[in-house]
Length: 295
Image 1: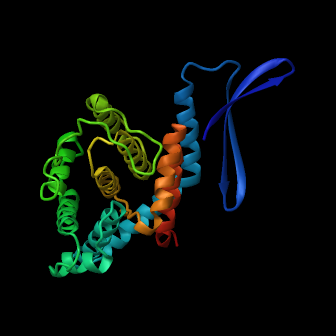
Image 2: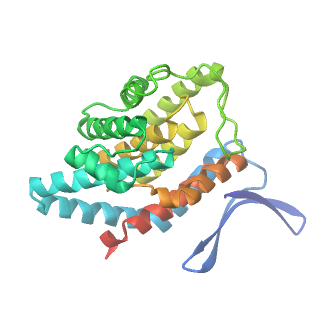
């Protein structure tokens, strides 16, 4: 977290932005002088300061990942690309739905989506939602346009029209709570304004930010708004991967077994009203999952 610090030297006051972080087991400290009074544009300066640290610490590695990934993609025949994409679709569908309570195992999900074999003794709702998620995933992959509220409403409708038709494709008009979280999403009355700001910010920032950072911030902000009665996590992770793929980066699967760390980062960000907590968790996760592209 970037903090504003005041120093008094020989009776004069000076203000600095400072940031402490850990890298390879060592604590590092950065600071930047901002003046002898708090500037009016301090939030903009804070963002620029943090961005300079991100560029030094993270973005060069992300650029290497993108470059190596792109070269490997160019070498692969179309059949191999299709197989790799299908493998990701299956594991992504399994994990993203499992995080939300699906009872399907990975074996169940793979046999259902690849072989058309429905698992016995498992909830029909989970089966239908797995099939729907895979369909929406491929729509996201092949979509020519850009993200919009209409796109999200359509994705949500397709995800839930067979299992929860009462909420499918509709913004919530009631208060929701997140199980196990102290964070309370905003009331339904502010959703239109919140979503308008969400997409305004996206259109402004999508050409400026690194795609990995943009994916992290979009996911965090979407989950904070929590605009649907159910399915916010699934939609947020689809948004995340749309941005990564559109930017030419490998997509990211957040594993069910790692959900505690994921939820913890979201919770800490909301508790401290600092999305950079989640952003840095996301950066570390992304590098860990894609370290093979850095060799």
